[in-house]
Image 1 (cartoon, rainbow, N blue to C red):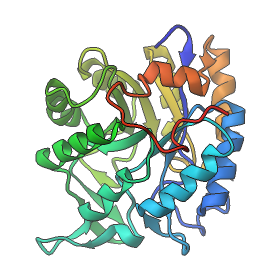
Image 2 (tube, helix red, strand yellow):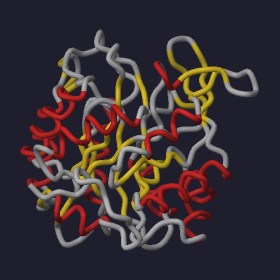
Image 3 (cartoon, rainbow, N blue to C red):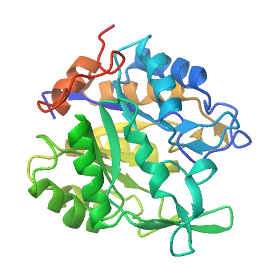
Image 4 (cartoon, one colour):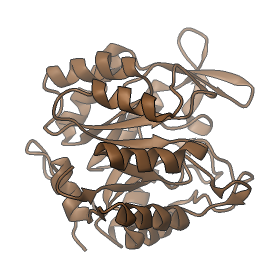
Length: 308
């Protein structure tokens, strides 16, 4: 961590929650952009964006991402990170070439085409259980490499997203050793989604410590705690020198039985970051910590790096 500065990431939407689960999840571009701006004003410096179709279901459509990105950039200079994971419904789900229900690869890769500074790179192959169906998320070693090469060619910094120790010591370590990211690599450790994602790890202080210990040298990292793990995982991350993420993508509740808003979750974690003796990074400071823009980056679209 650079000094005492902590990157606070807001993940406002995700690719799973439906309107019936919470009225506070922003689904359409203007709603997402407004929510992100409010969270930026509350102290968030990075936004992890998932796109939704007009019917509220998941998509990685580059046009929808670009609409969201442009609306956000017209308001503020928060670091924009578009997902290449997509979601578990909508455009993202179909039948793969092996006949198995799958989160479609050809849809996922569209997430790189909207000019964002960062994109998630899920160095993971998992089975997601959702709505009574099992969905393969097939990110083989060759597909991990394809994403990393494509991001590098576009000047996009990967957010290496990992759910288990094997994701760190196999795919991430291998691709970093091949030089497919600029220093410092940024790893998002996702914990607490093990009931829905086969191969994922639960959150505990010991599990987080183990995964941090396995990170390749020079990595910076943050943690996404899912559901009730969100707050303790964030505080644990601060103790271990990491960064934090909150938002309705990961957790719909402020406390048991009380639905949250993205702004509430951001305000609370920022308050606790300061109580722990740290200070939330500004967007400019987050870029410095993350090494943005990349040295190899081509000329970005106007909305990609604009300082409000």
